[in-house]
Image (cartoon, rainbow, N blue to C red):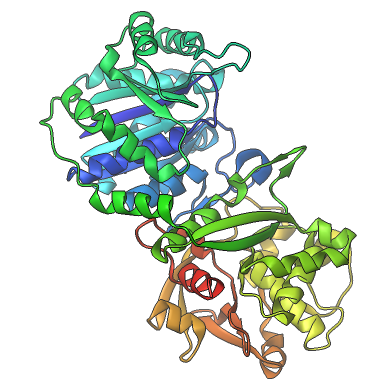
Length: 541
């Protein structure tokens, strides 16, 4: 078993996750079994309680772990499911050690932070590797080297390197800025990052040099001299328009075989033909399909962030590639429609509209107005989780005449007293909410869904029983199902175990679907999700 640690230098957010996933794709294309692990330095036990504007999207695995969005990158690039042991946080590691100590699993030893915590990290890495039956395990350490909160994870990497020198590789992903007033690519920040890494007892075997432009020979030589590394082991990683180009860029410098050589393995040919075809389509698709995403987790000051909905964006792109369409995505704040209803007419220019997941009552009325506009104007519409719930509320209010239709979630947060809770809290969640147990307690992970015949959903999937990933506390209230159906709503997907509505559709509409689950989590570049595929197909007409 071989282990590759990936850490960042200079600053976060420069693409360590995509770099890690890309290396995984390259190694998989060479015939190896690959898995990947993400380590977050937060005290949070998981990502479930983190603000999407601060941390980005909360990705959910098949077995219901709320984790960092990079787990989504790993799944998309590797086309493999990632499970619970593949995600670590500082809080999760400490909690595991504390629970084991309380259960006398250490036999009465006095447990110190070092080596107690690094040993727990190493044990988790090896457990995940064994479960995945992996030849290669990629371990991404979040944040940057030199940060206090990363020291224990770097110590775990150092111990593993000491114990298995022939089987452990260390890769540093570092940013090389090009200040506009200077016009020259600067290597000093990366030199400093390498120095911080050395202080932790580690030496980078390979440096991935992230920058706006390709790295030139003088810069490679400079990094080689000051970072104690061969020039050939400095890999250029320039900005690209699509993240799916990254594995191909790495292979231009033969990164895959360089990794194999350093781990005493024979060179192998990469098989990335299908990947290359996909990237070619991404670059050369001339026909646009315009999609509007109405949400609230992307405005932060003067900046627009896309990380909160990264899986939705990628799922749209995957379907676009399959249909040879180039998606043009526009971000629309739902609060705009609350301030000015006349601005709803701007939605008419879109080929399709998506309302993604979310929580809380901020921006809700604006989303409901947007849903109503899409329904009445026959604009293809896809509502995801919260988007599905709001679709049911909008339909109940404006098609069924239940004017005070709402969700128990809004009653809870606003002190409202509406009796018509179209969306209600799940029975097993009521006790948890009362006891303020919010972390890791929602309906999480994969559940079955039975599809009704002669529906758009059944047509899209091509089968009757499906399995999709969930993340919610509230559901469509079964007491209102008959009323909604009488006015033209179709309950096209039902969970057979608990009789919960999983998918709603509307009659006499080209495409109006809401899903209680998150289909975006299961979309892959070479295997677009059926619902997104059907949505983009109809929108493209």
